[in-house]
Length: 348
Image (cartoon, rainbow, N blue to C red; front, side):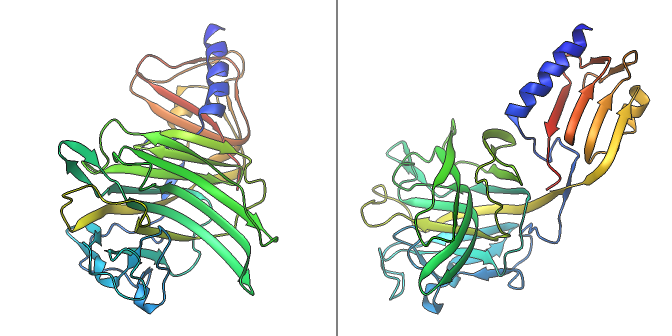
């Protein structure tokens, strides 16, 4: 009976601890159609629109950003968003005379799922001190409708959005979301922050969000660091997805002696969706049932019937998701070294 109490407690903990990445969670399946490994020798322009200020794209998201098509390339298995030195950005986007690059999907393709990139930020060591000041690499999604200059609806999820002023040492990322509907006014933001032990320009890291109908969970290197349930309370629309390098406005300057060009490098963008069997209840009575389990979001899952015993192996990593309930009814053992996750998940 002791093990039953332990894992009922673990279930309660998992409701607060929230999410797991597709690395360990077999309930996710890759969406190869709406992903990009960036393994070609040119941008897939059927999928991505390359931002370009001279052609009318936004010049000033970061306050000092001037997008140019020539600053976006794909080679060596990487998307390369280049930041040029002063004197290169075009008029009329000549905010701080620095040219940058970015891409966005042509249409709002994404609604719920798991969104992940592996990326290395721009930055350098200035006199031995790590510096990413003024850079604002981003990974975000949005949806907008406007009428007569008034934004009627704005939905936004910032998987990360760096502040070029606050993140001087290139050691933090901020996540968040925005929801505004129908009033042509301000919209309340929410979000969290993660600090890295090493500068983010030194190596590639994973940045991700799990977006469900009732929650947003943000992850760094497969570890969830911030979750918000039931906010925004209204459903968000399908969104476009952006990968772009922005720059803070003229109030913030690069560190002295910065070498140009600088690059925001992205190894891949991957989208995953949950496998679902939401009308299905599953009962597992023994280890054979456990070994044969087909991972997907169920309506409910029950382990045992009050007398049976089920056990993970010491190296097992298993995550179970259900919309209504997960019940342990009997003895369930998870030995040292194994990993068990019980995650309440809506059927979106």
